[in-house]
Figure 1 (tube, one colour):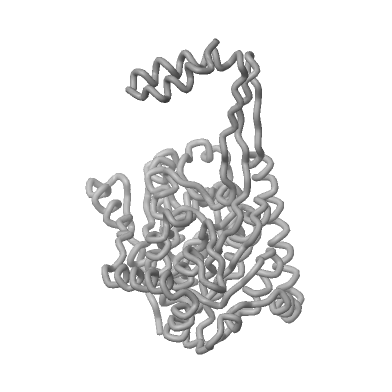
Figure 2 (cartoon, helix red, strand yellow; figure 1 turned 60 degrees about the horizontal axis):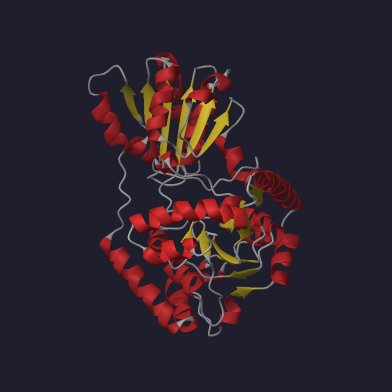
Length: 438
C-alpha cells in the first residue's frame, strides 16, 4: 500500500497565513466526557477497595488474571534476570545511556539543587533547605510499544535527587513483559515495580493500597485515561505535567541534507497521528527538496501510515521571510523539540526563548535526545514550554525556607511586621512581633 504525506505548505508572505497557521496549530486538550467519567469511577473504586479493584481492572483491561497482588510485583531478581537476558549490545546501550543521563542530572543537581543560607548584617540567618521527596511513582507506557528510555528519564533524576523509594508501574497486556523495560528499571535503580497500568495504576499510586504504597508525586506519560487520572489526583499528589501529542519544529537555513530533515520530521510523526512536525525555512527551493525527500523515504518506513496521517493532518512546511522571522514564529509555537538545523546554530539560539529542548546543529538529531544525549526527554508540549520546563532533578525535590532572626534583627523586622499587621487588621500578628521588641 502506498501512503502519501502532504504537510500543509504555508508562507508568511501570504495574507491568509495567520489563519492557516492558527488552524494548523490547534489541538484541544479537552478529554472526552465518557473517559473523564470512567476515570472518576475507577479512581473512586481503587480508593475504596484498594488491591481488589486493581486486580479486577488489570484482569478487565490487560487480560491478566491473577488473584494475588504478589503476582503483579516484579522482584529485583526478576529485573536483574531481564538485564542479564537481553543481548550484549542492548545491555551496553542501556548502561551507556544511563551513564550520560545520570551525569547530566548530577550536574543539574549541583547547579540548582543544593541548600544554601547566609546571614545578614544583624546576624539573621536566611536560606533555603532542599530535600528530596520520600517516594515517587513513575508511569511507563506499555501495550502498543515499549519505552525503556522513559524508565531511564524518569527514574534516574529521581535517584540523583535522593528520592527514597521509586515505584514503577507498567502495563503488561496478556502478561507479556518487555525485557528491555525491566532491564532499564534495574539499571536506573527502581525500588519496586508492578505490572499494572491505566487509571487504576495512577489511583493505586496516589491513594495507596495494602500492597502499593502511596507516593508523593507521579511522573511519566500515558494514554488519555492516564492523563485524565493524573489531572484528577493532582492535589492529593504532585504530577509532572499533562502531556499532549509529541512535537518537533525544525528551524532550517537550507544547509542540512534534506533527507536528514525529512527523517527528523518522521521521527515525531511516527509516534501517532496527532503528533506534529513543522519545518520553518526561508528557502523555498530547500522546502521543495525536503518534500521530495519525504515522498522518497516514506515508503521505507514501517510506520508509514501513521507518519502520512500525522504529516497530512498536522504537519506543515512553512516558508518564512528570514531566519529571524523563523525564530519569532518558533517562539510563538513553543515546541517540545526544536532543532536548529543550521551551520551557524549559535547565531540563532539567542533569539529562541520558548522550547522544551533545543538541538543545535545538523548533527544533533532529536532522536539522540530521546535516548542517550543526557538531558531529559520528558518535555512540555502543546505550547506549555512558554511557562514550564523539562523533567529534572528539581521535580523530585522540594524547598523549605530557612529563617533564624537574631535579637537585633527582631527589633527592626518587628517594627515593620507590626505596622503591616495592624494595616491588615491582624492584631495577634502584630502583638507577636511587638512582644519581641525591647
